[in-house]
Image (cartoon, rainbow, N blue to C red; front, top):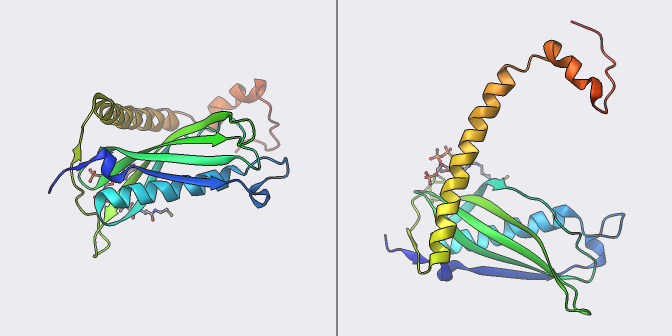
Length: 184
Ligand SMILES: CC(C)(COP(=O)(O)OP(=O)(O)OC[C@H]1O[C@@H](n2cnc3c(N)ncnc32)[C@H](O)[C@@H]1OP(=O)(O)O)[C@@H](O)C(=O)NCCC(=O)NCCS
Protein backbone atom coordinates (compact mmCIF):
# COMPACT_ATOMS: atom_id res chain seq x y z
CA UNK A 1 0.00 0.00 0.00
CA UNK A 2 1.31 3.46 -0.90
CA UNK A 3 1.87 5.72 2.13
CA UNK A 4 -0.20 8.89 2.36
CA UNK A 5 1.05 12.11 3.87
CA UNK A 6 -0.55 13.92 6.79
CA UNK A 7 -1.29 16.82 4.42
CA UNK A 8 -3.27 14.51 2.10
CA UNK A 9 -6.10 14.14 4.61
CA UNK A 10 -5.77 17.30 6.72
CA UNK A 11 -9.32 18.61 7.14
CA UNK A 12 -10.87 21.75 8.61
CA UNK A 13 -14.53 22.36 9.35
CA UNK A 14 -15.61 25.88 10.24
CA UNK A 15 -19.10 26.50 11.55
CA UNK A 16 -20.95 29.54 12.86
CA UNK A 17 -22.42 29.02 16.32
CA UNK A 18 -26.08 29.93 15.90
CA UNK A 19 -28.58 30.55 18.76
CA UNK A 20 -30.19 27.12 18.20
CA UNK A 21 -26.91 25.54 19.45
CA UNK A 22 -27.06 27.28 22.84
CA UNK A 23 -27.86 25.72 26.21
CA UNK A 24 -29.99 27.37 28.91
CA UNK A 25 -26.95 29.36 30.07
CA UNK A 26 -26.56 30.91 26.62
CA UNK A 27 -23.31 29.03 25.83
CA UNK A 28 -22.89 26.40 23.12
CA UNK A 29 -23.91 22.82 24.05
CA UNK A 30 -20.93 20.48 24.50
CA UNK A 31 -22.82 17.94 22.38
CA UNK A 32 -22.81 20.27 19.36
CA UNK A 33 -19.02 20.47 19.55
CA UNK A 34 -18.71 16.70 20.04
CA UNK A 35 -20.85 16.11 16.97
CA UNK A 36 -18.69 18.45 14.87
CA UNK A 37 -15.55 16.72 16.20
CA UNK A 38 -16.95 13.33 15.19
CA UNK A 39 -17.76 14.70 11.75
CA UNK A 40 -14.29 16.12 11.11
CA UNK A 41 -12.65 12.94 12.50
CA UNK A 42 -14.72 10.91 10.04
CA UNK A 43 -13.84 13.15 7.07
CA UNK A 44 -10.12 13.13 7.88
CA UNK A 45 -9.87 9.37 8.55
CA UNK A 46 -12.01 8.38 5.56
CA UNK A 47 -9.84 10.54 3.30
CA UNK A 48 -6.66 8.86 4.54
CA UNK A 49 -8.13 5.35 4.49
CA UNK A 50 -10.08 5.74 1.27
CA UNK A 51 -12.91 3.80 2.93
CA UNK A 52 -15.78 4.25 5.34
CA UNK A 53 -14.56 4.62 8.97
CA UNK A 54 -16.18 4.29 12.40
CA UNK A 55 -15.37 5.98 15.69
CA UNK A 56 -14.03 3.54 18.28
CA UNK A 57 -12.83 5.72 21.12
CA UNK A 58 -12.29 9.32 22.09
CA UNK A 59 -9.48 10.51 24.34
CA UNK A 60 -9.67 13.48 26.57
CA UNK A 61 -12.54 15.79 25.86
CA UNK A 62 -12.09 18.67 28.27
CA UNK A 63 -13.89 21.87 27.40
CA UNK A 64 -11.41 24.45 28.64
CA UNK A 65 -13.39 27.55 27.66
CA UNK A 66 -17.06 28.20 26.93
CA UNK A 67 -18.01 28.82 23.30
CA UNK A 68 -20.40 31.72 22.67
CA UNK A 69 -23.26 32.19 20.22
CA UNK A 70 -21.82 34.09 17.23
CA UNK A 71 -18.36 32.50 17.52
CA UNK A 72 -16.84 30.94 14.42
CA UNK A 73 -15.65 27.52 15.49
CA UNK A 74 -12.95 25.78 13.50
CA UNK A 75 -11.98 22.15 13.95
CA UNK A 76 -8.55 21.33 12.55
CA UNK A 77 -8.02 17.61 12.08
CA UNK A 78 -5.05 15.57 10.97
CA UNK A 79 -4.05 11.93 11.12
CA UNK A 80 -1.52 11.55 13.95
CA UNK A 81 -1.03 7.79 13.85
CA UNK A 82 -2.02 4.73 11.88
CA UNK A 83 -2.01 1.11 13.02
CA UNK A 84 -3.09 -1.75 10.78
CA UNK A 85 -6.78 -0.89 10.53
CA UNK A 86 -7.05 1.99 13.03
CA UNK A 87 -6.11 5.65 12.83
CA UNK A 88 -5.80 8.35 15.45
CA UNK A 89 -7.07 11.74 14.36
CA UNK A 90 -5.95 14.72 16.43
CA UNK A 91 -8.48 17.56 16.51
CA UNK A 92 -7.75 21.09 17.65
CA UNK A 93 -10.85 23.18 18.28
CA UNK A 94 -10.66 26.97 18.22
CA UNK A 95 -13.41 29.56 18.56
CA UNK A 96 -13.05 33.03 17.08
CA UNK A 97 -15.02 36.06 18.16
CA UNK A 98 -15.42 37.80 14.80
CA UNK A 99 -15.99 41.25 16.33
CA UNK A 100 -12.89 41.31 18.56
CA UNK A 101 -10.76 38.87 16.55
CA UNK A 102 -9.93 37.02 19.79
CA UNK A 103 -9.28 33.33 19.19
CA UNK A 104 -9.74 30.80 22.01
CA UNK A 105 -8.35 27.28 22.01
CA UNK A 106 -11.24 25.34 23.50
CA UNK A 107 -9.84 21.79 23.38
CA UNK A 108 -7.68 19.22 21.68
CA UNK A 109 -8.90 15.65 21.46
CA UNK A 110 -7.88 12.40 19.84
CA UNK A 111 -10.38 10.19 18.04
CA UNK A 112 -9.49 6.58 17.27
CA UNK A 113 -11.21 5.50 14.08
CA UNK A 114 -11.29 2.10 12.36
CA UNK A 115 -11.52 1.68 8.59
CA UNK A 116 -14.19 -0.71 7.37
CA UNK A 117 -14.18 -2.64 4.10
CA UNK A 118 -17.14 -3.47 1.88
CA UNK A 119 -17.69 -6.59 4.05
CA UNK A 120 -18.08 -4.29 7.09
CA UNK A 121 -14.91 -5.74 8.66
CA UNK A 122 -11.83 -3.73 9.72
CA UNK A 123 -9.62 -3.19 6.69
CA UNK A 124 -5.97 -2.17 6.32
CA UNK A 125 -5.15 1.53 5.96
CA UNK A 126 -2.21 3.10 4.09
CA UNK A 127 0.93 3.84 6.17
CA UNK A 128 1.47 7.44 7.18
CA UNK A 129 4.22 9.43 5.50
CA UNK A 130 5.91 11.60 8.13
CA UNK A 131 7.24 14.71 6.39
CA UNK A 132 8.29 16.75 9.43
CA UNK A 133 9.54 16.42 12.98
CA UNK A 134 6.06 17.52 14.13
CA UNK A 135 4.48 14.63 12.20
CA UNK A 136 6.94 12.24 13.87
CA UNK A 137 6.35 13.78 17.32
CA UNK A 138 2.57 13.35 16.99
CA UNK A 139 3.00 9.74 15.86
CA UNK A 140 5.27 8.99 18.85
CA UNK A 141 2.90 10.75 21.25
CA UNK A 142 -0.01 8.66 19.95
CA UNK A 143 1.95 5.46 20.63
CA UNK A 144 2.73 6.67 24.16
CA UNK A 145 -0.90 7.67 24.75
CA UNK A 146 -2.03 4.21 23.67
CA UNK A 147 0.52 2.51 26.00
CA UNK A 148 -0.45 4.68 28.97
CA UNK A 149 -4.15 4.06 28.32
CA UNK A 150 -3.61 0.29 28.29
CA UNK A 151 -1.66 0.60 31.58
CA UNK A 152 -4.42 2.71 33.10
CA UNK A 153 -7.09 0.21 32.03
CA UNK A 154 -5.17 -2.71 33.64
CA UNK A 155 -4.45 -0.71 36.80
CA UNK A 156 -8.08 0.34 37.13
CA UNK A 157 -9.33 -3.22 36.61
CA UNK A 158 -7.01 -4.35 39.44
CA UNK A 159 -8.17 -1.57 41.75
CA UNK A 160 -11.80 -2.18 40.91
CA UNK A 161 -11.62 -5.84 41.85
CA UNK A 162 -10.26 -4.89 45.30
CA UNK A 163 -12.89 -2.18 45.81
CA UNK A 164 -15.50 -4.15 47.77
CA UNK A 165 -18.31 -1.76 48.67
CA UNK A 166 -18.83 -2.86 52.28
CA UNK A 167 -15.14 -2.56 53.18
CA UNK A 168 -14.88 0.87 51.60
CA UNK A 169 -18.04 2.60 52.76
CA UNK A 170 -16.07 4.52 55.42
CA UNK A 171 -14.19 6.28 52.60
CA UNK A 172 -17.45 7.95 51.62
CA UNK A 173 -17.87 9.60 55.02
CA UNK A 174 -15.97 12.70 53.90
CA UNK A 175 -17.59 12.83 50.45
CA UNK A 176 -20.65 14.85 49.48
CA UNK A 177 -23.04 11.92 49.41
CA UNK A 178 -25.62 10.43 51.75
CA UNK A 179 -26.00 6.69 52.19
CA UNK A 180 -29.64 5.69 52.43
CA UNK A 181 -29.34 1.93 52.21
CA UNK A 182 -28.57 -0.52 55.00
CA UNK A 183 -26.13 -3.49 54.94
CA UNK A 184 -26.54 -6.69 52.88
C1 LIG B 1 -14.29 -0.79 15.78
C2 LIG B 1 -14.63 -2.25 15.64
C3 LIG B 1 -14.78 -2.58 14.18
C4 LIG B 1 -13.44 -3.07 16.17
O1 LIG B 1 -13.81 -4.41 16.02
P1 LIG B 1 -12.85 -5.54 16.56
O2 LIG B 1 -13.52 -6.83 16.37
O3 LIG B 1 -12.36 -5.17 17.92
O4 LIG B 1 -11.70 -5.49 15.52
P2 LIG B 1 -10.16 -5.69 15.76
O5 LIG B 1 -9.90 -6.43 17.04
O6 LIG B 1 -9.61 -6.23 14.48
O7 LIG B 1 -9.64 -4.19 15.97
C5 LIG B 1 -9.59 -3.33 14.89
C6 LIG B 1 -8.73 -2.15 15.29
O8 LIG B 1 -9.43 -1.40 16.26
C7 LIG B 1 -8.57 -1.14 17.36
N1 LIG B 1 -9.41 -1.04 18.54
C8 LIG B 1 -10.36 -1.89 18.94
N2 LIG B 1 -10.91 -1.47 20.09
C9 LIG B 1 -10.28 -0.31 20.40
C10 LIG B 1 -10.40 0.61 21.48
N3 LIG B 1 -11.27 0.45 22.47
N4 LIG B 1 -9.60 1.69 21.48
C11 LIG B 1 -8.71 1.89 20.49
N5 LIG B 1 -8.55 1.04 19.44
C12 LIG B 1 -9.31 -0.04 19.42
C13 LIG B 1 -7.63 -2.34 17.40
O9 LIG B 1 -6.44 -2.01 18.09
C14 LIG B 1 -7.39 -2.54 15.92
O10 LIG B 1 -6.44 -1.58 15.47
P3 LIG B 1 -5.22 -2.00 14.51
O11 LIG B 1 -5.78 -2.84 13.41
O12 LIG B 1 -4.72 -0.70 13.99
O13 LIG B 1 -4.23 -2.74 15.33
C15 LIG B 1 -15.92 -2.63 16.39
O14 LIG B 1 -15.68 -2.48 17.78
C16 LIG B 1 -17.10 -1.76 16.00
O15 LIG B 1 -17.65 -1.88 14.91
N6 LIG B 1 -17.49 -0.85 16.91
C17 LIG B 1 -18.61 0.04 16.66
C18 LIG B 1 -18.11 1.32 16.02
C19 LIG B 1 -19.21 2.28 15.77
O16 LIG B 1 -20.27 1.92 15.31
N7 LIG B 1 -18.94 3.54 16.08
C20 LIG B 1 -19.91 4.58 15.97
C21 LIG B 1 -20.33 5.01 17.33
S1 LIG B 1 -21.99 4.65 17.67
